[in-house]
Image (cartoon, rainbow, N blue to C red):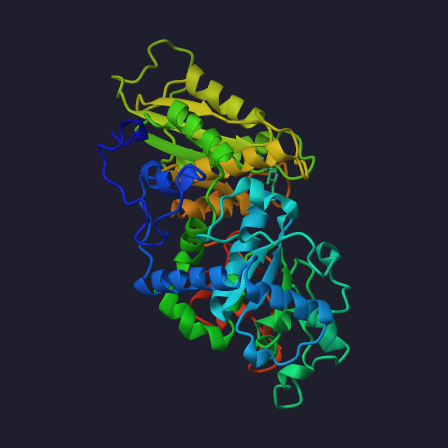
Length: 487
Ligand code: GDP
């Protein structure tokens, strides 16, 4: 059977088709090379071009990363505030600030990496939100964590109002794209802050236009903050499109590959994942993941429970139940098939109800259905280590299931579906908490995450536009009508 306990009876590709570099020290990060044996769904194959580009990028990270002469020089340049002769500097940097929940942070970091890959920048991540505790280093023989004593001392507070933001520099005409020629490198600032948060303005979102990218290209340091998955926006930039098409002949796999490449659970989190998987999921014939995202102070909701059962039973994800009090109401014969349901939620109520339902009533199919939930944290905490480790472990466990049901609008679910290579069933967001949406859920159009704060502007025509209609790879999301996703 597929249990990793029986490894190495089943062959698996620990490098995911060349996506991962060989030769890392295994002890410092067990998940990196063990993850393939926990995945029944081996996922899609990365293109040979992506694989070679990743190896090139790793070389860049080593050549320019912390501890190198190039890095000291670039820091010196940043301290001096003078952009100088940038042509002679071949190391340019992107510092990524991610925040909010674990799902948001993963999508933000993957987005920053995509941009770094496209623009040949070294990616460094702000370590203040536990990226170093939750994940292993992704690049061999160097670090992606921004070292302490970074000269822009208040960078973690950069926000909408920061005067050095690209949007504000455009607004204040410190930078201009309307005067024809791109300015000489010496006239450019040494750094710019790229604000691509949910509250980004139209000017900030000019980032997704070609001319703006030509300007940004020569700025040695960029600091980016986002809480979104901005990759569908990068497809709107004509300058990136050809390269993206070569890297990802299947556009719906961008996060699938980048996620599996970048995010390896640290040993502590890997322990949480593998112990749970081996105890509760490994021996079942079928695994169904149900992500029940409870936002804010939403009380236990019978309507949401009904939405879950309707969705899973209508689409054959879980068996229907035989109901009635008569003892003769029994399936004709036990099927000996087992389904393990993994529920993740801040609340325990939903999984307890499901568990009783499948104990007190027989499944029409006679299948044995077990329902388990790893943690019930009650509510969302910020900056709590063990809380974040559990969230990350649960996202990963969901990605190891065969069938996935997610909650609309949640980045937690997006990450699970992308890692798992699963096109989920999305439970629609109800207009009113006491009414079950009809239909309760729908099959997502792709496994790639939804971009929640896209631009609504056609860069070429220079006016507002429906950005879900500009390129065939970018469509609107089924769970958030204004969002964009790759298909
Ligand atoms: P989103 O807010 O749904 O887009 O997802 P995020 O992961 O960005 O933020 C939600 C945060 O709430 C998570 O990172 C967790 O800290 C917490 N959380 C929400 N749902 C769950 C859950 O099912 N399990 C656990 N352990 N934490 C959760």
